[in-house]
Image (tube, rainbow, N blue to C red):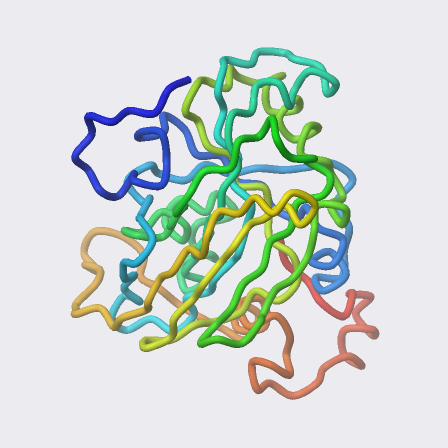
Length: 276
């Protein structure tokens, strides 16, 4: 596909144009699976609204009255040619570009989303992407790196060698269920280190190929406090948090400032950490 140079919507400046679909993967890195305490046997997915895309250098609001906005540094794949029931061996041929993404999520809405992530992951500005595209033909999909910094501190650092499901498998698997069309974006999951961010924090994410030096550049997003009220209680369920959501969002009970409950989990037959 070619890059659309006619669009005036700056939200999509890090992409060839507005994507028809954004598909995101749940657990995909070994490091994240170890952090969560469970390893999936197969990949699972959810959709994000294309209206959630944002460019580098912008801001994202933490909705007024909410607590648990979390970052997730990820590698984004941009589909270059339609893929329907393609093999894993052929799948990478349908990927045109690679870049950085931040799969932001509001854990305050997760419980009421009941696993769909429709509201918790599709808020305005919840999918920053960019700033630059890496030609997928010039890199090894098994040797890409994603790093995240929060206020200048390195928070995530992993490579696709640590994926449970290789990038080509993800593309091929999705193509079995529906056509991946030119311009569609796949967010390929986050490694360990995702956590909560608060107004004033600056998140930077970079995807690169250490072997070739190709880089997306740093995707920069600043968190700001939203003005309220954010939601109308007469229309639907409101944000709500509990200690389970706090643990999931922060990455551990210790990081969330919660007391250790390993003993009670073991007594109940639960892993040390749970979550998607």
